[in-house]
Amino acid sequence: MNILVTGSKGQLGSELKKIANKNQSNDWFFTDVEELDITSSSAVTDFFISNSINICFNCAAYTAVDKAEDEPELANKINAEAVRNLADACLKTNAILVHISTDYVFDGENFKPYEESDPIKPISVYGHSKANAELILKIHEANSVIVRTSWLYSSVGNNFVKTMIRVGSARPEISVVSDQVGTPTWAYDLAEAIVKIYQKCNVAKAQLLQLSHHL
Ligand SMILES: NC(=O)c1ccc[n+]([C@@H]2O[C@H](COP(=O)([O-])OP(=O)(O)OC[C@H]3O[C@@H](n4cnc5c(N)ncnc54)[C@H](OP(=O)(O)O)[C@@H]3O)[C@@H](O)[C@H]2O)c1
Image (tube, rainbow, N blue to C red; front, side):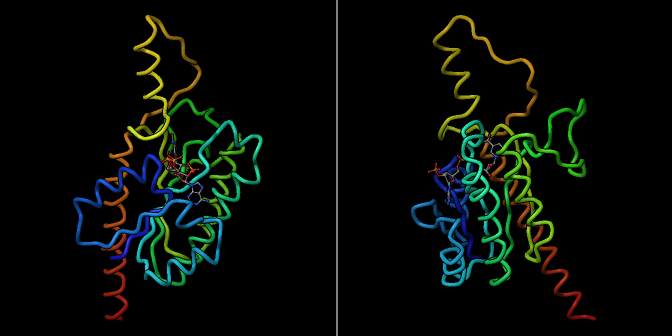
């Protein structure tokens, strides 16, 4: 299998590298914006075709939630329009797209944990851009899986857990907002989970193929 990881210098992409090191039976292609800018439709198509990509873990994103309020076009270009580029390329090479989404597609007004089937209702520019990607994939013919996560943390980059450890070790007392509820997700756990999800999709795809041969 030829596996493409986009945005691979980020938190999730970096953890997928650790899994790839233990899984030498596949060919992994780790790219970030310098090697493959996912907003370029032609570059994405060329990459998929020349490397016969079978699966794409899309870890590339515009993740600066507050900054996105001032850069809505750029956020939408990377988080939504570029996802269409990846889906188009997946359709051409019959690849599966595993796309990462977020709890920001909801408005946060629920008093119970969200379920997959709850209606999306983004309230921020970042949330809208990620919701747009989900809507694109839902009607796209390419095989895709959307995995929503929240509050990712790892040793790479900035995240809530690292901030709390840094601030907590420098001050005797810290104040944080109390009106936000979230579940921190260790990026390595998510990396393992999305590889498992892909493996299940692949088994289901093979079974469907076998079934269609019998019909
Ligand atoms: N972080 C969270 O708390 C969180 C929560 C929920 C969902 N998610 C989602 O989970 C996924 C992974 O998040 P993460 O925390 O690993 O993100 P991250 O650390 O910000 O990594 C994203 C990577 O994508 C790269 N990138 C940006 N524009 C690109 C482009 N046009 N082409 C290719 N690569 C590009 C970024 O490069 P630059 O750094 O140079 O921009 C960065 O290396 C994203 O879809 C995100 O929306 C994250």
